[in-house]
Length: 315
Image (cartoon, rainbow, N blue to C red; front, top):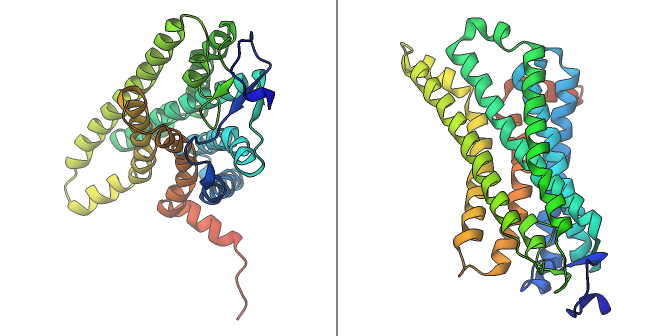
């Protein structure tokens, strides 16, 4: 097809996504676990949102932040998987230039928002454990709304230059993206111009967002651990710290694959391209799938409400 040639042109109206180069024969088989993960993510996060909305006892800061996390996970997973499946099933590799920039923005924006939500949840755990008597007066509904607004605005503003920088570059080499979705640097690297501004900004934002968020989370949990170890009995320490285990699990599920993907992409020149792309897809699908499962298993209030929703057989 003419779309696949690499002759010179200026600012293409479409890009071509290759899926996972090197694993083309396995595209259909790979789509099966991806579909399962996506289905679990969609169902699980909608259940979380429904339960929090219907259960008045869950209208507290921790579950407000959990609802934000569920919405963010729905956006992130839906931003990539429909197009990935279109490539795998129907070989529909074309994506409009503007649609590519929108996808690029949504992925990076909501990933940054998710990172900010984890900081907000860590702060909630810090206040609940270190200042339990003042929790309701510190984290009032207006304060929670302001924290949520700051988290969202930070993601929106920091990632806004990505599509604008990508749009300004001339593209005259090829319109073929060796990826399954429009990732910022995968798109910008196709430009026939000096892209150091985009490259440096992308690296700076990634280090700033991740570094700052991880720092605040570590500070929060340092204070939490001090408070936990000051408790008089082992049972009290385990019970108190048990309220943080769900949050810690979702943090690890988010940051460890993200950091691994970031460093292998930047410094793993000997790592095959298909591994980079496969891991990049998994990184954006696994946290949205795991988060509702972890909170559903570890949170008694969600379990109780879910059990009430399931019709019981009469004896």
